[in-house]
Image 1 (cartoon, helix red, strand yellow):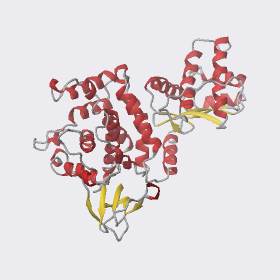
Image 2: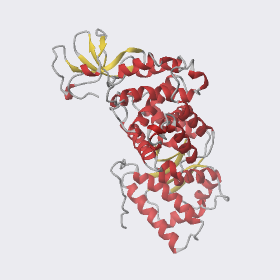
Image 3: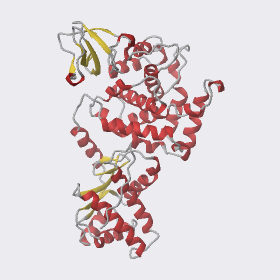
Image 4: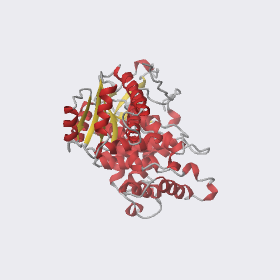
Length: 456
């Protein structure tokens, strides 16, 4: 048997690409099964090629399970990452499963072409067998390496709760969740995905790992320490989504609302790169963003919420209580955007603000742009010394703040960068620790007082 070639792009996680192919090509098998008879030579060749893909997966996994979870396509419990060109196929897979009353299908090591063909013969006529009836039909046919799981009302919720509980709490932002968000933002905003149409409800797949990580208690805000000066729009959108979800979580929003906030934050500047020169007007990118989002999707509650955030995320600081007319999602996106933009601002005559300097602007001159609860939630999410801020301790040493302590915003987790004698602590010796109980932060250092090595 010839092993199929799996093509990977440099930015892809190699673990996910074979899963994406297995999910999307199963959808293709179902579509082809409506055009060919099961015994047709072309369809048999398609089945054989799919078995070759399964054999590659069986080398490291005893079985492959295709299933849905909270509206996302998954393989073996892992949500498949966002790929614009595969969204339609993955959504069709979920629709095929739902139409048959199934949570998922599973293929295990040892499956033969004859057994696979028999399974597809039962699976394809979805109007005949559904749910438990399809399970019984597979049992009667003696299928042991191809199984289906009927849809249970609480199965998705129980599976998600179990997965979240198994995630360890870590100081560093989970690399997989952050990398997935960043990669998806680049594909969405730098390419032509919006021009070709991307249903916004499908973008929940892109932001769900971020939402899951925040709800699981992981300190995702640590990734905000890496906002760089003059950062491109896709990276800024990803950081804004991260900050917005952290703020929304502090406000007590539910899982579905956190996903809505994240999608709105990703697209809040969707028109910025296409608005043309500034001479076209200060509101040109807002109108262009509305046009692009409206063009890309159908109107539903999520898309309307995103459209509002596109229009409302730049409040009028001189207006009296500008937040009264803005939605909660718009305000959350707005305050996250303000903080991240101040961090990354790159002007010829403007000082590069530190994280504490950016937070001070939001809490000071800009405070009245949002409902009074929003700045408080931002401080609870980031702490008084936000991730990446270099601080001087009361013993004269310097440290970098990493994440906020949820119980005391004034006492972050830190890593020392200079000791009390002014000697640099080697990177290999730096460890993340809570601020010791006998130490206090004396002050936050502005950027120009930071050590010479790049800590941003």
